[in-house]
View 1 (cartoon, rainbow over the protein chains, first blue to last red):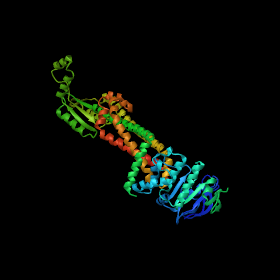
View 2: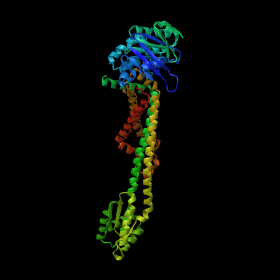
View 3: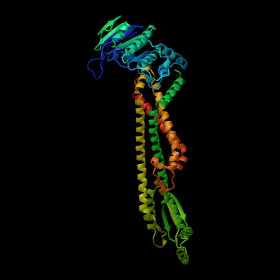
View 4: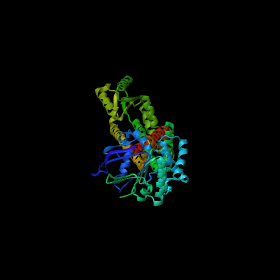
Length: 227
Length: 315
């Protein structure tokens, strides 16, 4: 479903590649944890999937289509089909929880009735039904991340990318977030998770890809964190 | 996607953003208000200048005085030849009788002069032609032409007594120069103020949108189309323009009535020339002010937002 074909990325300022000659395939419904130290190339790899980073060499395929060759319209559609969650939540600060989630549905062209039905449903899934009218600055970090996850999955994307989603959270909140991600995975969504949190990876207990200096050094079907 | 739904959503988000980013909106509106006042200043100053110069220009003329023995035909002949000149705007004929009546009127309180006039028995005043040129700079050419006419006539047959241009020459020259420089300065001032106002507003809106750059990044990421990202900011820009121009249109009433100096209009100009009143000009041309101010502010708000968002749109 997702295929990285010998991709290399060299940023302008660096001589050593951020990602070097990586080939990686991911099947539908998988839960893949990508681990490694900071600067190992995890985030760069994920950003190539939704064309925020363009590979210097090689190609990224989503289904049968090459991501780098999509028109800007097709790219928008692709992005609506990939949910993204980041360490810093990236919510819209001037919109409340309802509007933040509704926004993702609106850009996908859904009707107001659909939106009014889907938003409470997805908030229920992440356990935040009581904060529907709160603004991001009124929420804790864990709550903001749950809103971000709700926004990422409300369009029922095929893939959810979670880039260090627990990076700013305490262990209990981190555990909750991983629980939500597993629940989403159980519902059929492919999940790509990057982290350098050992307990998070170990608690997932699924495929683990280990990166170091832009290369894949391990790929275990049912792995643990080992660096 | 249903286009109407999209427009509705963009408009709603623009309005909501305008209200929720109250402080940013306020500063943008204030900047646009200042810009609008500059615009008003330019419009009114130019109108005052034009009207004042018009008044002054109307007071200048060249007069040909004829000798008392000049015949009606001689006067008409010169009048006809003057009318053929392209520089001449109008010619007023003052007959000998009219000149005498005017003279008496002017001196009606001066018994001595009137007595002397009565004693004379005959009318000592000649007929005259008051000539207006289309532009002040053209008086010289007309005067030269008349001078040549005068020179060509000789002895007892001569009809022209004198041409008063050379007595007025310094005044006319100076006025021509003033009109010329003030027109040039007016254009320079207009361009300078307009450009600086434009830059100030553009920068304020850019700053306002700079604070929202992360938000724009998130919208990109969620898969929002360019117009979906840009639209609400442009709606907010239009709202800045609308609110500020309405504010200015209302504030102009008390300001022009009581304290025009507040928006940089020099009240001494009005005192000097008297005939121009900025408040009357404003009320008489309200529609013009409404269209210019609202149009400029709204267009500027939308354009600035469009340009500012463009920097952060990556798709």
